[in-house]
Image 1 (cartoon, one colour):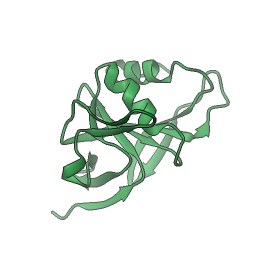
Image 2 (image 1 turned 60 degrees about the vertical axis):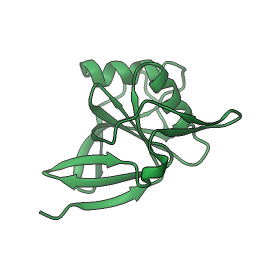
Image 3 (image 1 turned 180 degrees about the vertical axis):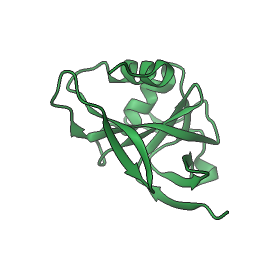
Length: 142
């Protein structure tokens, strides 16, 4: 079976084995969000560039450059080493380039390489890292 794939301008972390793909334009805070999630117990899969492949109907993320695996750029501090995993199956997508207008948003999805995934937009508050940890560990009610 041949895997379909592409490389995106995105950052990926894994929380209890489930991958979170963080999208957004340059400067949107992808690495900052990943840094906060790593400090809360996530593992870094890739920073700034993520290689995505579809195998067996699942979207798998890896670091496209093995020399950069486990490294995260922190503006104003430098490039830091982080706990890392070589890959993760994406279970959730966060798009920091789209603001969340709703207090209780509807379930949203995004399709990447033919795989539909739950999507969270960027809420205008500071609890996003904590909320994403809970979402991946315990799910969403409604």
